[in-house]
Image 1 (cartoon, rainbow, N blue to C red):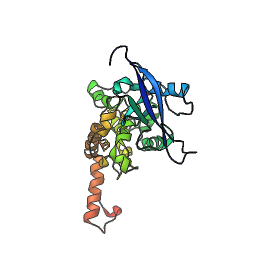
Image 2 (image 1 turned 180 degrees about the vertical axis):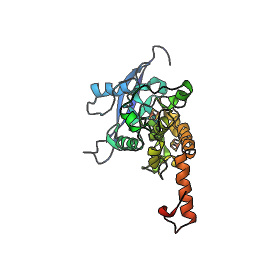
Image 3 (image 1 turned 135 degrees about the horizontal axis):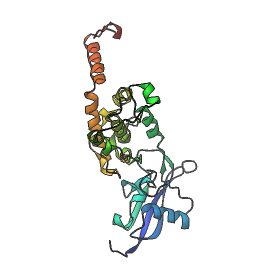
Image 4 (image 1 turned 30 degrees about the vertical axis):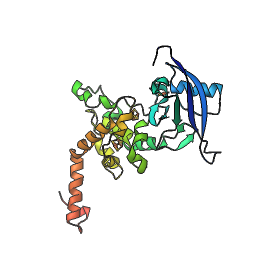
Length: 267
Ligand code: SF4
Ligand code: SF4
Ligand code: FES
């Protein structure tokens, strides 16, 4: 890309309003792009100058709020973090993110992610409830304790990873990489004692075991997080936990003694 380069770029934009349209359509717009123009700038320019009916979601315009995720030339990206000329294409195809219901045009519905997020309790849980509700001091950490989770803590909840996940596309109940990464971030935190409360969701049929580690999620994360890695570390954390071992032991004993009930088993 040359310093003062300006090029005419064709935007092929997905349009669909489920309230009135029976099927999606594509609309073509053309705008001039210089090296600083992002895809979000371009879409807002189109909205302002050519078609006010186009729906786009955004807020921060600097890759922080996680609102502007969409498919850009077939890949999950943040529109505000993608420069048009860096795509090296005279046509830019813009679609809503895969794997989510469409609210309108490029705006998708993340309700499923937020519902699943509640299930994994994404906050520090202390052993002592009284202390948790009325903390008496700071919970200090050593640098090596911080290093355990800090690389997974920058998530902006943009949903790109879950949109790229092939498991989520075939199992809508799968917790998804965004949620599993968050579960690991909190469970491995030295101040947290909440893994047992998260386990029913994480160790379920649609929990972490459904991830087959192909890492499509990690390849699209705009913050450089590696959710595929945190999910594998989460599996290790779970299998080494006392609560997991106790539950599995109980299940094995139930299988080997099919007539036994929980109340007749003594540990
Ligand atoms: S590594 Fe796991 S969570 Fe990530 S895309 Fe693959 S199946 Fe989905
Ligand atoms: S892990 Fe990355 S891609 Fe996934 S939601 Fe967080 S910031 Fe977005
Ligand atoms: S507008 Fe906030 S991440 Fe793009």
